Amino acid sequence: MKLKTLVVLALAAAVPAMACAKKPKKADAAPEAEKTVQAVEEPEPTITEECVMNVSLFHESVKNKMYADAYGPWMEVYTTCPNANKSIYSDGSKIVEALYQAASDPKEKERLANLAIEMQDKRIKYFGNDPKYPKAYILGEKGLAYLDFFGDTKLSEARECLQQSVEGMGASSKIMVLVKLVDASYAIYKQSPDTKAEQFIADYELASNYLAEQAANTNNKNAEIAGKQKDYVDNIFAISGAADCAKLDAIYASVVKENQTNLDMLQKIAKLYKRVRCTESDVYFAACESAHKLQPTDESAAGCASMAAKKGDYEQAVNYYDQAIKLAMVEDELEDVADYQYNAAFYCYNNLKKYAEARKYAQASIATLSGLGISKGQGRCYIIIGMCYASTQLYPNDAKGRILNKTVYWAAVDKFVKAKQVDSSVEAQASEFISTYSRYYPTKEERFDLPGEFSGSTYYVGGWIGESTSIR
Image 1 (cartoon, rainbow, N blue to C red):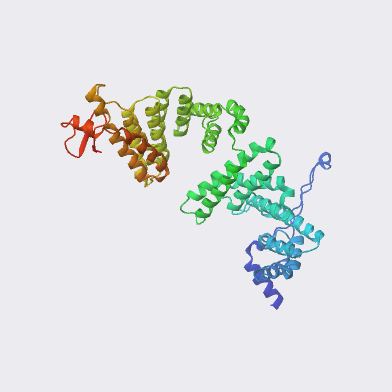
Image 2: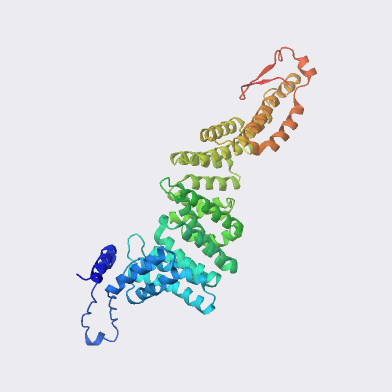
């Protein structure tokens, strides 16, 4: 056997994909009337021994980062047998990128930029059905190529490719494709904020949700990177101005009306409004109410609670928060549970004046956060309890009762002190309350007038409070 034949056989064995060469298909004869309109099937390129040899040559050069040397055999294969092997496109991207960076002639750079895009189209044509890197994946590469080679001049084309890629790949999308979808969409939005806000919001939601899913996947080796990139796109969205509540209302008011039975759409809108803190919007309320009728969730219940509170129906608001608490517990969304418990506590204290119930909800929120090892958020609950105590009159409004009613301030200040200890975020507010309510302690003279009530260093505050405190 000749040496050349041995080399060719060895290379063919090393590149299995090349062994799948197909002979040109012969189209069936079309009826006479159809011959003018029926497309003629294009023959698939034949993979020759020279193709096999050139694949080996350019692949070896790319491995050694000798991109100029790789270009000649690569272009030969790309032109004559583009179906030979996937490495034509993976290596080709590296070759074109390197030559583009090295080129100084504008026309040459333009040619290479166009070649980079054309290469992805050709890859889709010959390898679009690849199970690992299908058409949707390649569209992501095409979108990235548009941004790399054309910058802001082809934003719409880049964004369309990236969006289609993410729609097709879902949670398996490349992190960079997800991030660049938001970047491109944001740049388009900045050019036309009045007409592109809805598109930008939709792209952000799509990418952010998949990044969150990747970040939460413990089996994903890139979970940490996905988490950081989610923070990045969240920040882009926050500073974009698209999250303005009035702007969201203008976009989604009609969408909610037209999707009263579309649970998925209603839930997405409700989540978006919650994320950007537009939970006082009538559109948010409408979405939550409609979604709650179809399938109650903690988010829809919380939205209905906000709506009830806005209408002044605080009893109903607390009832909805009870539903939200139960539903969130089923989903093990304990941080949300703590928020709902606090909100119920606030309405019971501030609007319904049901101080014992307010304490019950606040204590439940503290317990939930403590179980999660979270201190932030506990402080506000202790402040609610302290304010409930400070607002309580346990004893009759007579001479003795007026003195004894001041003892609740000892118990109240205990809670404000505790708030500072567990949660530095409320330190200033707690200190202000301590300063305010410590002025109303029973005086020495008042305690002297009731020696039987104040014997010792501790005092038991009775009634619904039922706590011991220190005499000050």
